[in-house]
Image 1 (cartoon, rainbow, N blue to C red):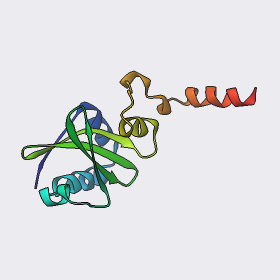
Image 2: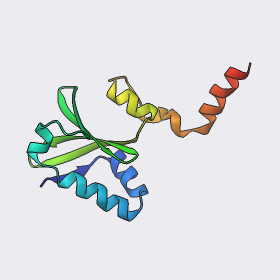
Image 3: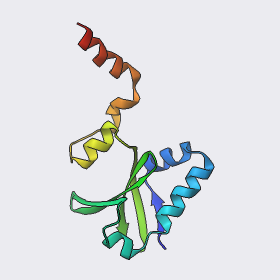
Length: 117
């Protein structure tokens, strides 16, 4: 069983969830074992980014990106599945916190207006 720590971004997403979902997510993370992380579980992916080994856990509509540091798991990001930021992070493209485009309806309205011209 691991101790779980959260980045500011992941803590913000976690706190926005209903309490029952928060507890379920933390339980799933803390109950992971070294054998699960080193195996080929269906819902856990692995990839290298900036010299770190990141894991991706699929939990309902969220993708939780974390790394194992000694006896703890540090959650770097919790992103909605199929979101632009999830795609950018998995594909190693740069994304800034200021440009979380999919969270702004005006951006999608603008793109939609381009197709109408």
